[in-house]
Amino acid sequence: MRRVTLWLLSTVSVVVLLFGYDASTSATKPLASPPAAVSTTGPGGSSATSGASGGSSGATRTVTGGVASTQWGPVQVQLTVSGGRITGVSVLQQPSGNPRDAEINDYALPILTQETTSAQSASIDMVSGATVTSTGYVQSLQSAIDRAGR
Image 1: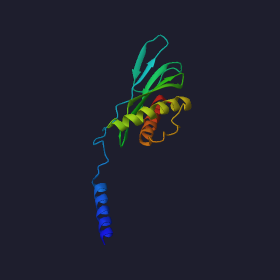
Image 2 (image 1 turned 60 degrees about the horizontal axis):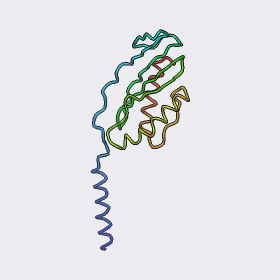
Image 3 (image 1 turned 135 degrees about the vertical axis):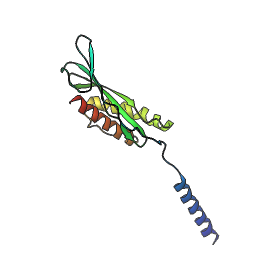
Image 4 (image 1 turned 30 degrees about the vertical axis):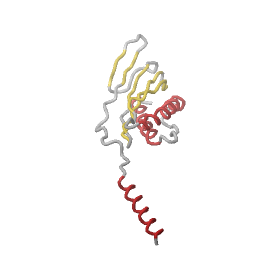
């Protein structure tokens, strides 16, 4: 009888603790993404910025993707496109609600950016252990690729 009582009290305690734990670290999400900015640098070094993609195929353009809202925070990427190829990727926003986010992003984002320049598309593999960040990254990346007209 004593074992049954101890087991029952232990089980009830665990259930109460599980239902009382708040796993959410982010209380708010961005309401809207900023408009995309495309900047084109011509051969003479002059640059122009517009809201739509365009320009010559030899120009270097910077295209900002939309903000992807994830459960851990926003993810936003910016592409550098030259001659129709993705030559660089910058991560403008990433989840940063706690130290674990920084640890995951320090590992995952360099892999994702390298995969992007290798694949030249948003068809890249997710990083194990960083599924939420990877999903947001790919969403913002696809948005930037679409805005670049690729």
